Image (cartoon, rainbow, N blue to C red; front, side):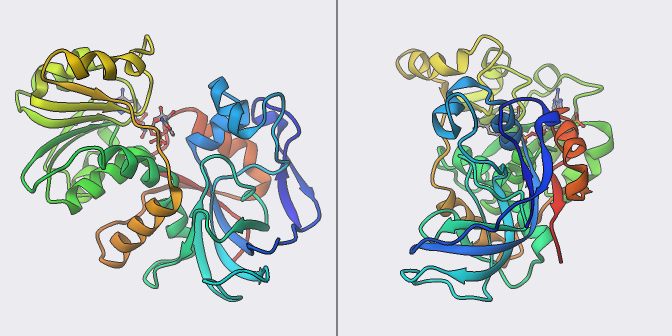
Length: 322
Ligand SMILES: NC(=O)c1ccc[n+]([C@@H]2O[C@H](COP(=O)([O-])OP(=O)(O)OC[C@H]3O[C@@H](n4cnc5c(N)ncnc54)[C@H](OP(=O)(O)O)[C@@H]3O)[C@@H](O)[C@H]2O)c1
């Protein structure tokens, strides 16, 4: 089969498109013909083995798998003897943010992991862009108990995580202010944002006098220090990054005992729970993928370079068929 491979951590230059043997499913695994995958920020972290702690999951000195990739959408073409909930021919999608080998024509995954049946109302190429970013967004947003009418600000709302967070929050009937750039303000409105700020022309922490239950910095370009004054008493700040001085690691402890505004730093988990949740939103017409560029496997280095630039809007797709 055709697969992207690498034998060491490094830049996109270590990636090579090769012909390798198809994997064989174990007793509790599905063999999947992958039609589409994405290149996302998690893939970029795994490619470089950075930040270092990621290597406790992906291999200490070198990657533990030959083939990279975390998101997938495709068809079940084989099953192990103990598989109960899937059959050959099922349309499936999913992810594993600790690394899966989905940058290939075929992959295997245990049925108990992050794999689910595809909603009927979506194509392979679209559903694959509802995985990684939405998984993180769901894991960050579900740390706060919202009621309809609560107010949330999402910075970096044009990214994979931010665009998913915006839609998940709108499905909860929350008022959302979204921050993005000039070219994407209309997109943010179309995803349901009630108010938008353009970070290229205004600093939202200075011009916005609204008070929020929750500020979510989905791109890590702001800080708790700057956003604190925008929070209501008992308001929560969450960032998808550690912060300029890794302060988002220790601020959760400090703010737990001091002050009435809190920082939370959630560790995302349970990919399966996330994709089942997003599948339901897709079925209800409350979630749609934001897709930026599409690449062929031959262009994989270019795809990683673009994603590493931090400028993608939503998701980047790589097609392996159909
Ligand atoms: N904690 C975790 O487990 C975890 C997992 C995955 C990713 N991450 C991190 O989370 C962040 C977001 O991930 P992602 O996949 O959503 O990234 P992404 O898709 O690359 O999105 C980043 C978005 O932010 C926009 N942006 C750039 N500078 C900005 C600024 N100053 N203000 C507001 N928006 C700005 C970018 O668009 P323009 O440049 O066109 O404006 C882009 O659309 C990344 O820093 C990533 O490393 C964390």
